[in-house]
Image 1 (cartoon, rainbow, N blue to C red):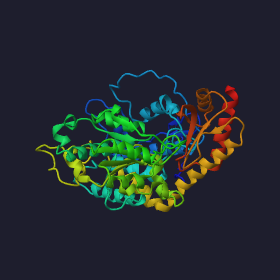
Image 2: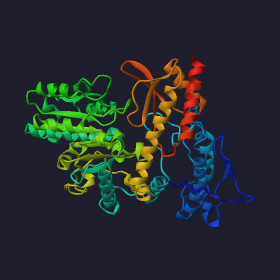
Image 3: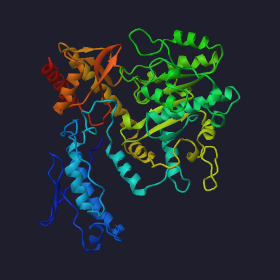
Image 4: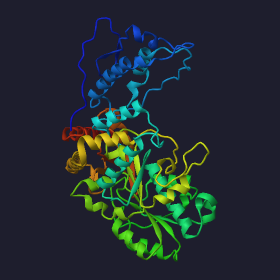
Length: 499
């Protein structure tokens, strides 16, 4: 995959410069000719930016961003930002050059290297060069992606179709872009809530959730966003029924799920299956769970926020076997597709349920019709999140993204191998995909802080089966084996420092 382009330029002697953080060389600020001069003066009274100012401004930003990208692997991966006192609202603008200089001085030094190869906290992808270009063009064209007044809507539909094929979901699944896994789970569970109402002859969209009575949500190891979504939906966090998992696993025990469904005596429910748990990337047997619908009435929602990308690897695709049978599926794209924040997709085989829930009716609004993106999610206006995904899929194809996934899986195994040969470090789970969950020799919290303080890497603490641990999640296209070795050295050094 190609590297991001790097600008080559010679600064004129009268150019102004701004230094990018602590690492990069000075970046030339825009040299504005006579036709741009008014656009860079402070905005006072009726003086406004002119369209002709764009070339000079964007050229400067390109150089600034180019330096940032060139140094992303060397900047501190994460660090607590120093407190910055808030400035008063600018009354008279200072012009673009001064705005950029102020940003570079006050804010940019505190930004993390989360786009870089050794940020292994949470599940955080980077942005491929094509995805970044798509994101820039998203802002350039500034389309409302749900307004039926341009080809943007069809571009999103095409991209969603590609993604459905990529994840093995097939044509029966439709989808819509949303902000992230939280909103994707929210939409999927909202559909499940509407389906529950239909089983009882109720439209929850009209009668409200109170008309349903108690709602049963069954899951083995649900993600925190499931609880958040249930809270927002009025179902409530307390209505999650934890089904026992398999020994030393985070995957649900099928026999226990069957018994839990039997205990409902035919009452319709929602089952949340997990395709990649946060701590150990464990997978429920989705096909076996889906088969239980022959005996019991339930809505099957699959949380495949990042585990769904196992479908891209021939060696690991069996982990998501049966996902196409789900009623709704959550996939987060700013994780492993390596597109910029924010982007996810919600998939469903029951798009007709979305219209009564999310329709927005008014005399000045489009008439609600099936498949109209305007009436399928909580947002009535949003940016064209599909464009970065379209660009990276077009530029690198399914094969390129398969290579990213398989490289990150290899990264995880390499770190795990090195840790298992290092005294005091213990894996709490086998590496199933892209996450390494382990205990260091010393205090977990202190070790995590020491790793962060080194500037070399960032990992997040967690708790697995009551044991405090660290987890390193690989999902960035830039990460190499050399980066993994640097992460390993940082972990070992941090462990020694807190012993």
